[in-house]
Image (tube, rainbow, N blue to C red; front, side):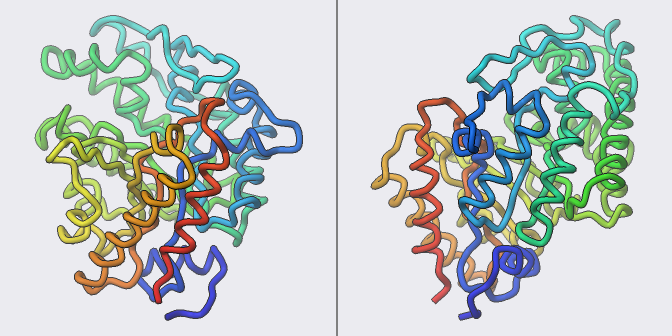
Length: 364
């Protein structure tokens, strides 16, 4: 067994498949951290004030001493700046309730955005403070919506997917500009923060929605996602992906893209949804650290006993599969998607999960 490690050492060792003292742990629970700062904040405040947002993530990192921090707040940052109406309740994740347009004629409204304005500025300002506070303490990956996700949030997924098939040319024009916006966000984060990695949200790499041909046409090509991956590498930043789809495009997003870290979910009721064992047996952890994949609803509906059981089961499954595959450490035990941020989600359940992973994740 490896010597006792710091969180940052354990994160780097796991990314590189080196021996570790225990498995990494990272539940995507950032929004729950608003409850533990000195003056608890509302979700609205956390989503609008970059200083409050940073305080929350820094407080969570200090409380749990975790190996990773992913600065996921919501999926409507760029949509807001494109002109969609984003509803911000006091205690609900911001969401779009009014889209930019309703047909092919509206795609030309999407022009590259200025990263010094709007909620994109909030994103950069918050992550500047978070990165400075967590340097060399935890492996930070700044969450950024990918170009297809940003477009779908802005114009509506149903409208977008219909237009992909009936009138794709305007969709491609808009994607060129949402990709340019993502490129500008990346450049700003690279120049003005000390983050070691970008986590791109490529949510629509999902066989439940798009097949291989469609996904490659509208995201997985040199004009869109691969352009951003190349620029991420050129900026000397780590490249991570979040995709909480039930049937993710693992061959494309892990093997073809060459991700360093891949955050994913698991839906046991769907027989085509890949479990941790299937992911490891399929070779997807051979060159990529996988983060997942406890059901997030356990954190909202469970108790200390059920949380302990869920973490124990996943730790045992992952350790067995890693051993059979001849791998040392390429898995981070975490939630498959965001821990429900509702007021009713007990922060004590996050405590219980982290403690359970530390107990059952040891590589004795």
